[in-house]
Length: 370
Image (cartoon, rainbow, N blue to C red):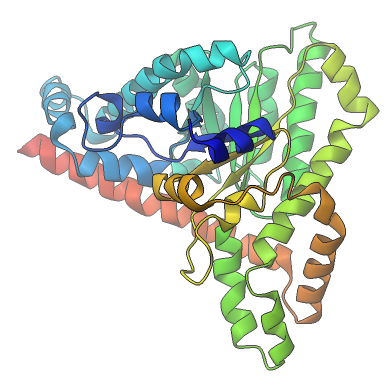
């Protein structure tokens, strides 16, 4: 394995791949297969989303036989997609099972997301999450649930039912606080029913690069040239302050009580860590967010950049809490409020997942007819 990737893992940041396709699950696939990434590049888990599955299924002929089989049996496009995606996730879970066992369930995780059209539907989210949990039927699966206002109570319910959850589309510390609260409350609900809380794992996916993508143009066009001194700093500062809250919770008496009963902490997961602005180093959102008990899920080009040109500097989060708070305060002085940015990005994020999902449904419908 490459030293830089080993250093990141040893520092407490688990490397997950933000991609999954049938090609990655076979030895002679066009993409580098997961087995090699696990063995050679310290990859300890996988995340998926509707856009990833849309690209995987629409652009590969490895799904054609199954689409024909399921359509001939009378399944509609959405049911076919459900069969295809859960099959891929189940296979990936099996591949990661040794990692899952070696890490006592902390890593070796594979995520699958509820239908993005349910992001504003609490009951619909709960129902489909239960269905995905049952269908995949692997201890190392994580069900992705959006951190919308409607998703928060769904998180609490699912955790209380013993379903491991990846909470996604988090853009602000304020919303992250609500996510952690729902996680803790779900565990406490189980204890109140005398149910075990060990074996339940969760991550909270805090989106990074999209924050800079939204804020940087405002800084560049600001009337005060001094605003440009904050270019490329907002996203990392926002994530570092989320981690500060994570440490506050982890060191609280409330968490210690749950930990003593066997609970596993909900780890922050840095998502959207591929750099969007070519002016920034491609490893920016990885190397500047190294800290214990975190996950960084990255597309393969980012993983390769980290492997080839990343510079390990140890913990790059805890020493910078004061600086992160200063950045957010200065943004406010320039009229940029992170909570307003987060609301806008949440709405855009949901739409960005709904669009490829609808495109995938249409693609499968066309393939079924052919």
